[in-house]
Length: 203
Image (tube, rainbow, N blue to C red; front, side, top):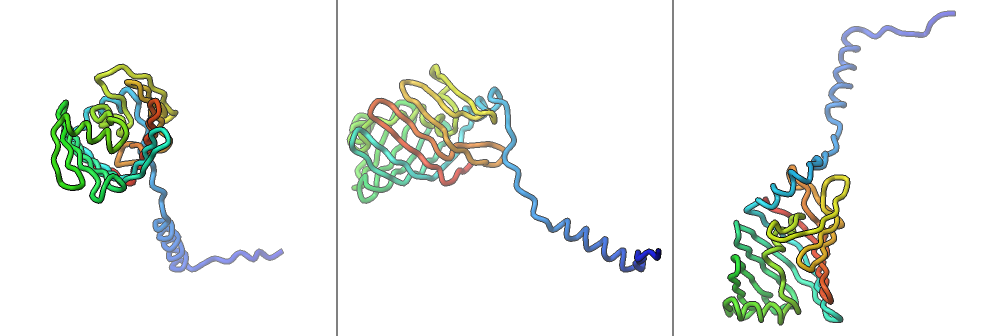
């Protein structure tokens, strides 16, 4: 029986190999998510993160009342600056917190000091937000200054945090550089529920 195998010329064979290698090099390589890092390493690293920003949206429900708003957050060391835009007024409110000091700029441009700022926030939001702890919670770690109960997923990320009377559930994360940061979290305390969706992080 005669074999039907054909021998390709050396030049054609080399060209075929080169083409196959080129095609292999053009294949799309899936982007790998941020690798899992031990909680004992991630927790202090994120708690010590001194500068970050995020943009997103919040939905707040207090009893039978509620509203949605846009959110911009900038953190620089202990100073928290956030802006809420939406039904809180034509321009929303701008909040600056530095330790125990608090200031609010209302939609009319009026600047309020600590005591009046707390009253304004409670009036607009229906509760006083725990800003000192929240700057840690949005990163997916507990406030290091108070006891906390945590539950982790297999990737060493928070799924549930209970601290200072609040329960925070983390249902979605996004890779940001070499880290996983929350994309969707819900805070609950008594009649208050705050759902936060992060559209983008800045580190």
